[in-house]
Image (cartoon, rainbow, N blue to C red; front, side):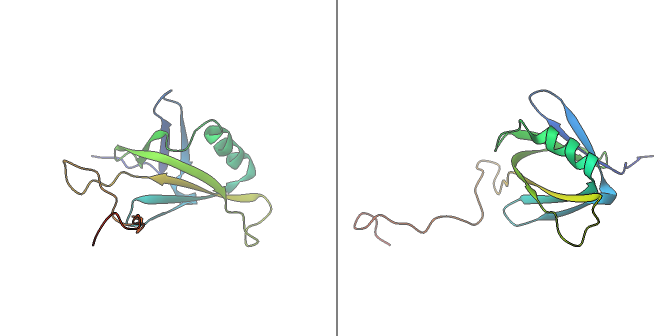
Length: 127
């Protein structure tokens, strides 16, 4: 029998240090490019732990994410933003963790689906 936990574990690949978030306080959204936003609403002391965990993580650093004990997958850290809104009580705070999951359309290449620049140097490349 497989047990699925109610935790989301984020692990720093370099040091093995991790933080666990309560899934009941997390909303996950993802776009077609694999940019995943974890909106986390929690008491201020938990948000402080979250900020401390990500304090020394640099943009594009590799992290491991395990949702409910279903298996870890690798992501690149994109940042953490303040999502505090007027709808939350004073003892709750709201942070959004941005993670980029690599998209692999073909096993031989890792291609971005959208967001390519339309810039073409003048007079050098023909359509």
